[in-house]
Image 1 (tube, rainbow, N blue to C red):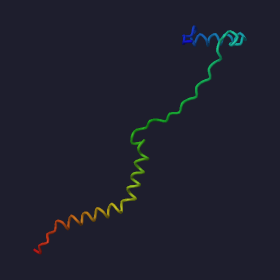
Image 2: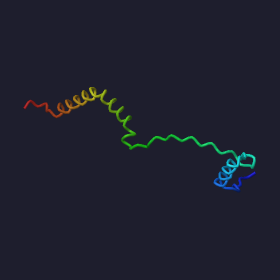
Image 3: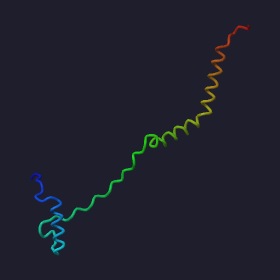
Length: 93
C-alpha cells in the first residue's frame, strides 16, 4: 500500500541476474524483474550566445526597416525643410 525501499540494491540485483545467466537459469524464476529498457536520449540543442539566438529576429527587423527606408528618408527631408522654413524670417532684409 505504500512505497518501501528495495531489499537488494540495483547493483546486487544486476550481479544476481548475471550469475543466473552464467548458470543458465532464467532470472525471472528467482523473482528478479526483467532488465529495464534504456531511456531514449533527449535532444536538447545548444543554448548559443544571445546575439546568435537573436540573429534571425534581428535580420527580419533590419529587412523590414530597409523596405520602409524610402518613406522614412522622405519624411525626414520634409521635416528638415519645415525646420529650415520655420527659422527663416518673413522680413525682407
